[in-house]
Length: 203
Image 1 (cartoon, rainbow, N blue to C red):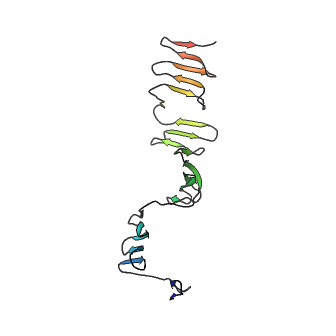
Image 2 (cartoon, rainbow, N blue to C red):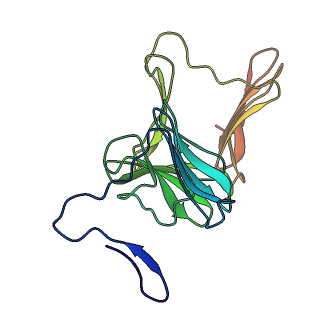
Image 3 (tube, rainbow, N blue to C red):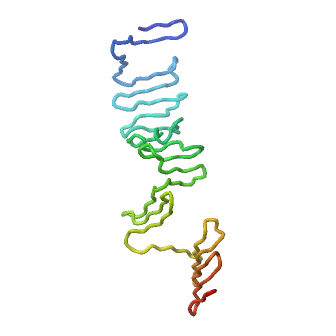
């Protein structure tokens, strides 16, 4: 059916009568009435293009598709991700105010918050080395730095290296470059190495 109802024009394919096909041996264009503004362009053996205000924003390519600007997904979560690599529930999504989350099989694994901080959930590990030699993670109870590969686990610093509490208010040990090793009890130094040996404080 082709008609105008006094307000709008319509081309309709009646229900149950099969597909409505619009074909062209060359390009197929949908434009404004004057033909001065494109809405859609399709090319035989080529791209399909979508426009906004006569500016091309999205097109198919031989490798997939290309965007001429931002791609925004207005709603997403850990189980319905915004960008997926093929598996259901696996990909990136909106994890809150200016935050990006990564989900695997519908479960959040890590996110990047509004401050740019990377946050891994419990028991999700950061692996380093081809054979996953070094692991850093928190299992919900304890935190770990584990080295299971060949070679030593080295902790280095050009200045001093200290082991402190989480509030940075108490020392547990200090390793001083070109100087002493100091051990503490309740933030009170009890043992230190010296150039001639070692010194104890207390019994």
